Amino acid sequence: MRMAALRVAIVGAGPSGIYAAEALSSLPDLVVDVDIFDALPVPFGLVRYGVAPDHTSIRGVRDTLDKTLNNEGVRFFGNVRVGVDISLNELSDDYDAVLLTYGASSDQHLGVPGEEHKGSIPATELVSWYCGNPDAQRTLIEDSIRGVSSVVVIGVGNVAVDVARILVKAPGALDETDMPQHVLDALSNTDITDVHIVGRRGPAQASFTTKELRELGELSGVEVLVDPDDLDMDAISLEAIASNKVAARNVEVLREWSSRAPQNLPRRLHFHFFRRPLELIGDNAVEGVVLERTEFGEDGQLRGTGSTEEIAAQLVVRSVGYRGVPIVGIELDERSGTIPNNAGRVTREGMVVPGIYVAGWIKRGPSGIIGTNKKCAVATVDALLADYADGSLPARAGAGSIVSLLEEHEIDFSTTQSWRNVDIAERELGQSRGRERTTIHERSDLLVVGRNG
Ligand SMILES: Cc1cc2nc3c(=O)[nH]c(=O)nc-3n(C[C@H](O)[C@H](O)[C@H](O)COP(=O)(O)OP(=O)(O)OC[C@H]3O[C@@H](n4cnc5c(N)ncnc54)[C@H](O)[C@@H]3O)c2cc1C
Image (cartoon, rainbow, N blue to C red):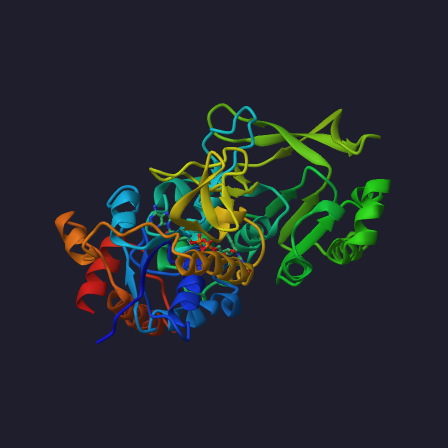
């Protein structure tokens, strides 16, 4: 019979949680039982509900993560919100250690007047909707994009680039993806002709990667417009491109676009650098954005120049960062939106909280690529194993019977088998429409299909 030396609960089945489960369940000389909990009925976090559906090879990481769910001793419990359906204390009582990998699901605000107008939405919500997240605000998004011809996307990271690309793509260009049918229908029926990407700082400071940027120039029927004046390099930008190869390559791509002759294509993507939003105008619904030109001062700080301009738009997508939210029993660093920790050991007022660990975006903030979470999760697992080896994990108080506890709390939880059933059903649904897969987006459907196959 399998006798585990250690029982670990992981909160969040995104890449960092699953990489941690892989590290814990494949140790050559220690048997570890790992239970992974997720608020959603199905695993994979932002790999399923963030990575753009038209980036099929990156979404394919899901298949690698999926293999870990088959490892001996690894169980998945979906539809369980830790901090709501079950408390952190209950998990701590039942496991030798709890590892928090629940990501950064909230959005940062712009802090400008008009931000609450109809037609001003966070990228987090738009992304959730087009990926078929069961918690997406479908009505809000579909009402926001209906009848829109001009969109402003505020932010110059990869998420902003994803959002701009999805919105500007030609009708039908997303039909091969696993997006739910209602999303494909809504995107095919938009009247969007212009998408403006706005960055506070210059092209040399933008955080998108060159591959994602370059892709924008290859979209069928889409012209990319860059103002050559935005590419005049000040001393700070020259230093940035001299010391950062990605920045240099990005500027090169933008420079090439800025020199292209007008093509008069049906849709346009406009880049606006060195502009910050001052106000979203309109009575109740967005009609435009007032931008102020910015520049670097002699002290190297960005400052407004007082010169303003307006872009007419009926939709503003705020893509200025994701941030973590607290769960009961855990303090968050308000500034960074992450959980304070010492090499992955959660701390409270500077002191280590025994038996509680953190990895992934909720440890580091929203940065890096999917693979960055592997390194991060493995480092935290190393800290956990070192604490186990030197006897500093707290004694377990509970009976170790999580299933009874979930049943006691009347939680309709899903399992790895439920995900397997959903996986088959999504492939069948997709194939019936000539695609590889179609995402099932209703929570109740995910639970019913998961249960019954
Ligand atoms: C829009 C977008 C596009 C991206 N595209 C790419 C890309 O193309 N390439 C790339 O390399 N990286 C990309 N990333 C980054 C990548 O997705 C992240 O690095 C990675 O997902 C972070 O992993 P994580 O496990 O820390 O968090 P997440 O993936 O967010 O996983 C956290 C999990 O915790 C669960 N959870 C939250 N709260 C609770 C709770 N209270 N109880 C239980 N469970 C909870 C969530 O449901 C979620 O499943 C993208 C990110 C975004 C937002």
